[in-house]
Image 1 (cartoon, helix red, strand yellow):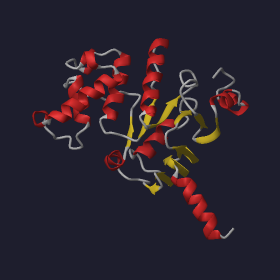
Image 2 (cartoon, helix red, strand yellow):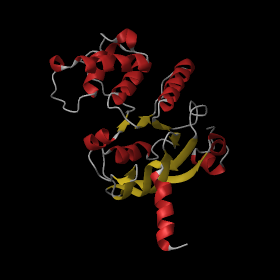
Image 3 (cartoon, helix red, strand yellow):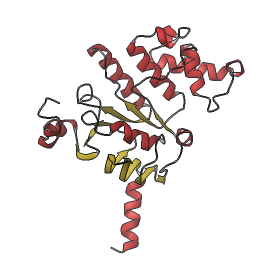
Image 4 (cartoon, helix red, strand yellow):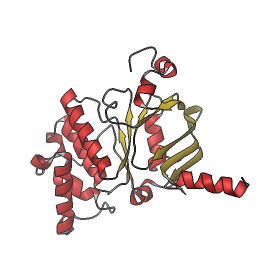
Length: 258
């Protein structure tokens, strides 16, 4: 096969990936948080992104979402090199993320928080909302299970409600790719089950999800594939069952149960 044909075949395969990282490294001074990391996310997948605490998971999300620029390497979204582009530009392209540390506007109602997420200009006035903006915000609140809390403020919500608000605010940007940071932390078993159902419904609507967690609990019934990192390096990838029984992954977790 010619070099041109080989390159064309590779480009066609890569174009099916919604996200691709190639040799991404992120350093903070002498500390390497991400070390030559490469992986792909296929369109429509739900992928678990796991590793011990401090492995570099959130920093990877920062580099993908535009919060940080990689020190080296490349990030591709739908085949386009988006390395180092600012977060607001990537939001417009269809990438959204949630944060483990919730960042709601506590002086606004739940409905207003979600409505404001639809507006890229943070100086936009609530009094200028179009009827369809508010209606869309109501639909999102219903979708994530917050329809009973529309007039309340975020500080009145329980932890699980704050998670749903964080997801709702991300959905307000109408993403194709949603990066979700530690959604199961602090949830009860029933709340985890409800959250899994929500994420599955988002995938059914065509969204691609990458979900960070520090272990496999809560992810086994959700994800198609798992990428595992430790000290910023990819150490394994595969199905949940393969990862669960991988001795390299077990060693990274210091012999503990996944």
